[in-house]
Every structure is written in structure tokens, then in C-alpha cells.
Length: 88
Image (cartoon, rainbow, N blue to C red; front, side, top):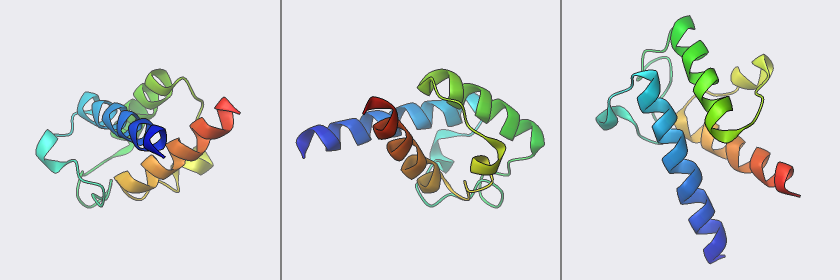
């Protein structure tokens, strides 16, 4: 249980780092922040976000999966699931 909490914190920190590299101000990064409405993502932001997300997490994200990322928490949930799958 404690390992899962530490792992989630690590994933969250790395995800927030991706968001900051994409140009999102730290004070706007919240779990329920919508990429479109709150963070004002456009096509270029999605491209940059995907580039850093794949690089930092060493994963490949399909376009259909990106469409499911409505907010920051959706992405965190995806990452936890994807990384558990890759590690098993």
C-alpha cells in the first residue's frame, strides 16, 4: 500500500513536470483542471504535451487515448494503469 502511494506521488510529480514543460503555470495545475477549458490547450499544446509525456514516462500514447484525457486526473489514472501494465 505504501509503495503504491509513493508510486502515485512519483507519477503525479512527473506528470506535473510535463505540464510545466508544456507551458502551464504551476498554480493552474490541479487534478480536476480541464485541458481545454482551464489550461487552454490547443493543437500545438497537445503535440508538446504528448512529446514530453512519452519521453518522460517512456511510453507511446495513441491519439484515441489522448482523446480520453479530459482533465489532469484522467491522465494520471491512465498513466498509473499504463505503467502497472508495462511493469508486469
